Image 1: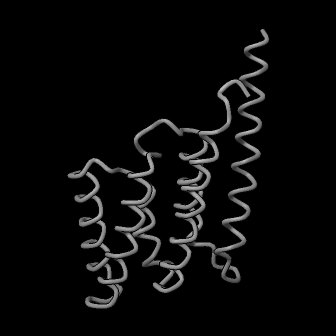
Image 2: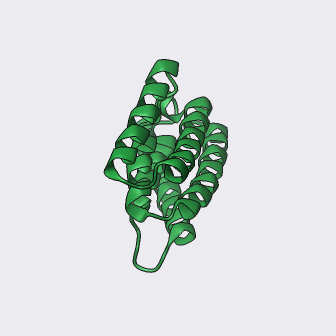
Length: 149
């Protein structure tokens, strides 16, 4: 019975960390009433906090996928524009690279798509770098919390 209570306490702590992290990211990325970029960030936070040991939350997967999305999205927006075709090319490049290199973080594919909905690549790039730093910091700090906390 004690282990059930302790496990529940950890889940509560993790949920509070998730809630605080999500609200912080939401505040940092808020653009008036345009919260279109929030969904992939919310899922990334969830994976990092609640699925810390999966390959989807590995430091390498997080860093590679977010940096890949930022780089390809900026380049494709600059050279091709923000059409449905450039979005499709961008998603194909990101998903192919993540799959081929086995550095997979699925929300980054959604981030690629949402960047075209926001239509402000500078904001997407800046927000994504900030969120990546938050994700990596959270990943590091959560590894320091004992599993029986």
